[in-house]
Image 1 (cartoon, helix red, strand yellow):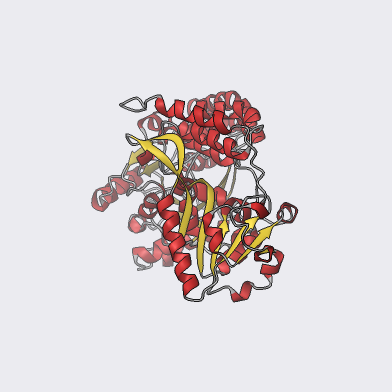
Image 2 (tube, rainbow, N blue to C red):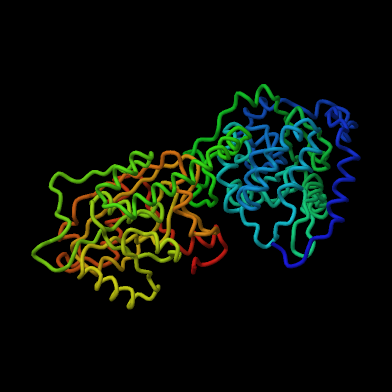
Length: 528
């Protein structure tokens, strides 16, 4: 991966540190911590803070991410995500094999080993899963009870034992913290060496901030877990620290999506399940079967007629269902040369193929980004768009004159129940527009990516145990809602089609674009 080998001094340094403290006791009493000079009246139960929730809008809060905000006590799934999404299957397999032995060590040693196994050798400038992958999983592990308290406070400071690069994106973008205090990963020649160090500069800056608030008469408060040591210097500046018992935390509920202050519109990564040790083991046992199913499903879809493809796909566990309106419009208008324009929302690369299977005939499609490999195995004709409106418009008009055409005006896929802004280019091409609502269900792997290799999209989708497609053909657009006959603007037509598809599948319409998605997930404009 690297042009220069990372020296083995990092490995020897890590092993020396591990031998020094591998079996050192981590059970430091919270009452005998460095805060022991403070009376026990400083510490109170979390339940007493709930009644003060409405009075916290001007309060500064220092909270422990793992001990309070997250419901789960286990950190293994987050490191497995790093291994799977950033390091590769081999590193993930090693972590899984070693985990039974790692779990026998104390907490600090477990953390150090997992950091080393997952981060050693990763390029710092290529590590983006902290902002593109982790927000989804951290959101889904957020406790509703503690979230309400955290979001009620005016100023928030997050303290974490996980490397800061893993959680900072989530805490700043979705929780709205003013500062994140956590350990930094050591870097050599642009690569992580798998060792952590305290970010003393950040801690000192935040400490000074809290001291200044105390001088002004403010009283910062803290939130932590009963079973964790309160040695962190930031808790020294808290007038009161509210502690959560393990038994109390187990009764908490996961934060519902509708209660999130900021929705999660985009996320990346291939893994669609929470990678606990058991789930990860099941995945590795399934992989040989999944790869075999990929070849069976692709062969059946490309080499056989569409009617027989349905049988092969159904037999292999790949389900495709579709519905049409009662007064279904014929797929080809015999009175005109031009074909129908099928306009659908975009869930995966395979959307046009699924529509073709539902129609039992090949329908050409246009796309922004399609790898050469996927072009070769595609059972339908695909044409790349150039992002030049004039050139693309002429090309799509030519394809429509030759038959039916499928377009995905969002320009990119969206996994969550949202529709991105529809490009209005299609509205000018034809009045024979059929909106198509597409839904996809998977259980193990996502068949789309923003920062990964797009040529692997079909492999991951068809490697799922039971991937399913639901296709809803809506009524053909009334002439009054078109550009030519109805004298509507192209923007009005595009917005109307977006709204009709949104109603059909229950998705929320947004004004986000392809560029917005790639800026968030990949740090570029999506020009791939």
